[in-house]
Image (cartoon, one colour):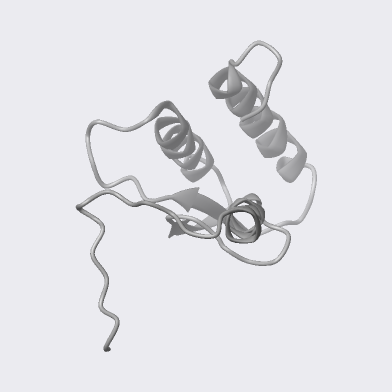
Length: 105
């Protein structure tokens, strides 16, 4: 998503086309694609692009398995690093009223 001109949708479409061409030159039979959760009609640019890549990949001669995740939080992921930085730098955080939690599970 970090392109100099901000046109990651076009870059992902080109990437997908190139990937499909290369796969045709191999004996690969299965592709596993990690996408975002896209069960709404009004998607962000990022999720709409992920859905388009999934559609382009599904129109191929190889089996496609799509795994959808909201965010991946694990050591080394951007989400993990952001959360880790917030925890290290902020002694407390003010959250919106809609955020509710249960201290006694």
